[in-house]
Amino acid sequence: MGKVYLVGAGPGAPDLLTLRAARLLEAADVVLHDALVHPDTLALAKGARLVDVGKRYGRVSTEQRFIHRVLVHAARHHEVVVRLKGGDPMLFGRAQEELDALAEAGIEAEVVPGVTAALAAASSLRVSLTRRGLARSVAFLTPRVGRGESGSDWVAAAMGADSIALYMAAGAAPAIAQSLLEAGKPAATPVALVESATLAEERVTYTSLAELRDIALAPAAGPVVMLLGDVLREAAARASGDDSESLSLIA
Image (tube, rainbow, N blue to C red; front, side, top):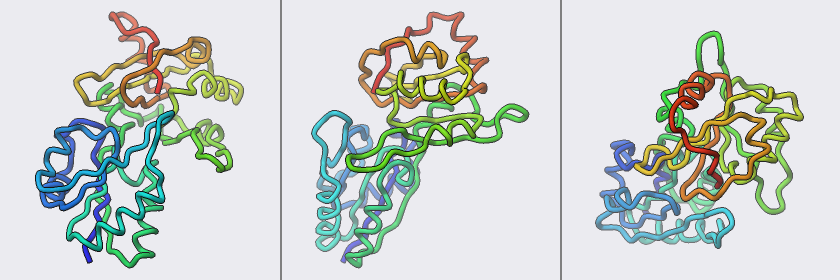
C-alpha cells in the first residue's frame, strides 16, 4: 500500500514550489494533476505516469468520484502517488473530499501546502492585503457553487472584511459587483483583476466596483483572481497614470 500526497503546485511559476513538493514530484510513481499546472512543474516528475484530472469552468471536466477511484487504485499499486493541485490544496481545491475518500479506503495521505493565488497576486501588485490602520481582516471567498448545492452567503462574509479575495469569480464580475453595491459596498472601492499571477503572461487590470458592474469583459486566457479593498487605492492611482490595460479579463 502506497501513500498519497496532496501537493500544492502554487499559483503558476514552477520556482514557487516548495522544496518538499519538488522532492515528491521527483520521487513520484503517479501524478494526478490539475489542468493549469505549468509544464515545467510536471517535468520534475520524470519517472511518473501523468494523469490529467483537471477541471475548467465551462469545459468538460473530470468527475470527482473518478479522481477518488484513481487515487485509491494508484495507491494500491504504487509507493508514491502525488495529487498535484493548483495553488494550495486546502483552499477551494476539494481536498477534504479526497482526504475522506482515501481515509475510507485505508490509505495514508499527507498534505503539502502551496502558495495560493490571492497571495501571489498581492505579491505581484506589491500590495499587502493587511495594513496597519486600514485593513485588519481578509476574506478568501468564491461565489461559485456546484450543481445541486445551496448558495453561499459570500456577500455577508465579504462585507465583514477589509480586504477581499475572490476566486473563480471574474466570469460573473458584473453580478458580483452588483451584489456588493446593493449590500452597501462603496462604488469607488478599488478592484484589481490579476490574470496568470507570477507567470510571464501575467496581466493586471485596475478598476472600481461601479465600473466592474457596468463594463462587459472579454475572455481571459488564464485564471483570474479578483482583489477588492482600500489597500489597493494607491496602487490603482499609480496605474492610472501609466498605460494600464483596459478592462479585458474574464475567467
